[in-house]
Image 1 (cartoon, rainbow over the protein chains, first blue to last red):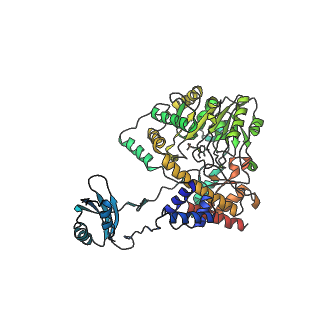
Image 2: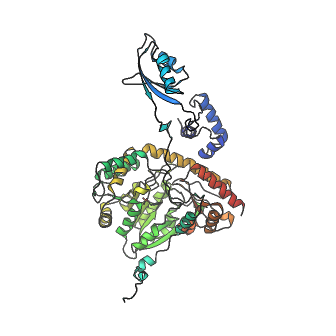
Image 3: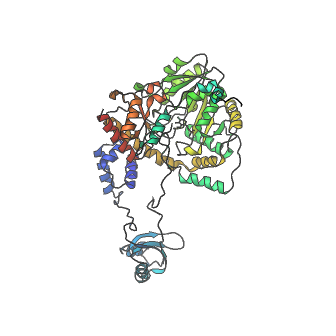
Length: 163
Length: 391
Ligand SMILES: Cc1ncc(COP(=O)(O)O)c(C=O)c1O
């Protein structure tokens, strides 16, 4: 990866809404160069999507999140991919990860209440043929998400003038 | 009744010769105003990377609270030595050629006191960091200032240095990447200066505190030039590269004779640098590369943003190769640096520092530190634009 590509990706990863004109000012590239590069990165799927981090709690929506660890039994010929596909098709499932260690797969589920999440896991996940066991952990508080610290205290002020 | 005391009568003649700091006025003015955007700050706007802070906390928890060797922790000196070998291919012996100090500020003072006899001249290349001239005066030396020129993008030439050398000259102080101009020097320019240093048998004090903040090409370490190792007192530190200003951590490297005399002063005036900060410095050198890289890349973006912005509003600004300062010319406005900076602060609440505070050739220029958020830089540029348009 060349330096300018990395530069653009870093800038966009931090602020998806930044416009090409501004990226040009920050990188010394022309607006056309920036736009072309971004178009390429989108086509190559290096840039997958532009998303917003929403504080739903502050918006008054009290979503419940749970992390569920699964042990799975692999079917003949079908690997983890098959079970991952069955899991990620549920919109309630927000993320699916294959893990090393004691459990095989970890998923994040979002629902409107603990009851709803618990039932979803009991009815839809635990009953899948390949799933041997589940361990559900409800999220009590999120401190940091996607590299963003959610309740960061204000930084200490520097002097306004120093040599 | 006993007669009243007049304290000022006791202040030494030497201290009365030191001019008041030109920055002070702007500090006081800025503190009085609200909604101020400051481009007047000579320190990173980042907090120290967490892994460094964490290493310090851990060391305090484990009771590392004692004095260290006068030279500093051996482990730290070894890391510093390795760093210079790796980055610049110049070796310093950790046992007697490296001294850990409380900031480059202390290292600078020690370096000057270690070599100056009363009346010795030290050449200071200006525009420069404000501590150089007073430090020389404190040591009983004579500062001889020479000015790098705006038309040369504030790079000093070997000829300009040579012209200032007399038989009383002991050393030259340079600082690249430079505070306040952001100027950097190419290797061949430094080679030419090295020739002059050898020819006149004097020393170089090189303040490389902004070394890691180099955006164009690679920083040339003066002491790594052929034959210059023992003619150089190399000063470097952690304040700028690792955003560790408050830790007061730096070091000096030179020939054993020089380091030894610096250590003698340090041993009686400082004893040693704070151990917690030394532990943080070890962590910084061992595991700090990634964070430094991130900060440097962001400074580089801001550099482009501010230099482009200043030029767009008609303030001619060369492209600084290092540090975190832009140094635009404000000559087109017809104002002096001081008038410009003072009116800009009063009318638009933007703090900048007049260039001539750092030396005569800085007259007509303004130091704009871009160690500030992009939002602040953009807003500051807008306000400076409004101010210039209204003139
Ligand atoms: C050129 C230069 N040298 C030295 C220093 C002081 O650095 P330290 O924090 O290591 O004392 C500064 C700080 O602004 C500086 O700009």
